[in-house]
Image 1 (tube, helix red, strand yellow):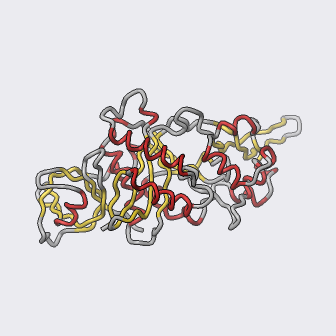
Image 2 (tube, rainbow, N blue to C red):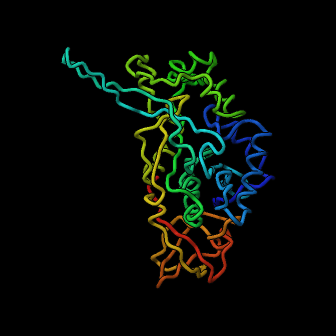
Image 3 (tube, rainbow, N blue to C red):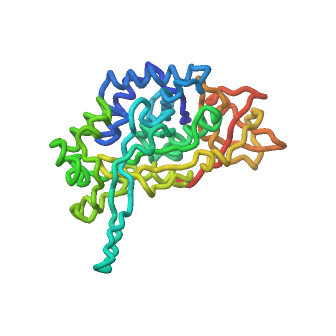
Amino acid sequence: MLIVRPVRISDLPAIERLALASGVGVTSLPANREKLFEKLQRSIASFESETIADIDAAHDYYMLVLEEDGVVLGAAAIAGAAGFDEPFYTYRNETLVHASRALKVNNRIHALTMCHDLTGMVQLCGFFCEHPTQPYAAQLLSRARLMFLAGQRQHFGRRIIAEMLGVHDAAGQSPFWDAIGRRFFNMDFPQVEQAFSEHSKTFVAELMPPYPIYVPLLPDAAQHAIGQVHPAFEQPCRILTREGFEADQYLDIFDGGAVLTAEIDRLFTLNNNDCLPVEISASLPDSAQDMLLSNTLCSEFRSAVGKVARVDGVAWINPDVARALDLACGQSVRISPLQGE
């Protein structure tokens, strides 16, 4: 059975493997053992904290792993605040109006303006699934974060974001980066992504121009890349858009990929989950159906997909699901409907 649980220090070799497999662009999974170890330590401290809502809540970082029979197949995380201790830079899509009354000309021009509007918002990050075609694997890994968030709702803010990997070729080159960033950094896209994963985005403010970028002046390839999602991220993007995330205003400053945004309380999982007492039986009623489930714990959080039958306000599950979620009769389970793959 596939389960999602908090990361452990012993998972470091598996997380390193995933980081290498994720390739260019998933900067929240850097192929750097020291940086990954720091993330694991930060995650463990966050899960074990009894006061998630303290003034240091922006430092909170929760990494979850997808596991089957003891083998880690994927990872995904929640950051309490995008940017944490520095601005979180994006491009904002804008329309600038250039008008001349004398010439009777009125032009609306698409422009990109660097901003840090999203700094401090809750962020879904670090998503990579090694076997996304396994039934419900990607959905379980992605939405388990929202099941955790639903159980700890009072400790998180109002808005949430998720960066999608943008378009780049087999060699890792990005047409968006080549048209803009490369002119100011003189670095290839893989080089700047590596620099960001090992350091921070503060160098962006130091080297990138603060003025609007006029989109019609960009090469066609760069214009076409704006707001696009890399094929490897199409499934994660679908999962989040079904949740209620939208891609309309913000772009990644490096590859032009979409930055999804949403109101947390309007997300599907947050509005379509129930917390019910558990009964365990090897024989479930015919009404049982596959659902997304989680326990209601923090440091011992578990999530899985399994059969559930709702009878008179009680969730009936089988022993295998109960063991996977570490649940006993009378304890609470959170359930939410699955969505199409």
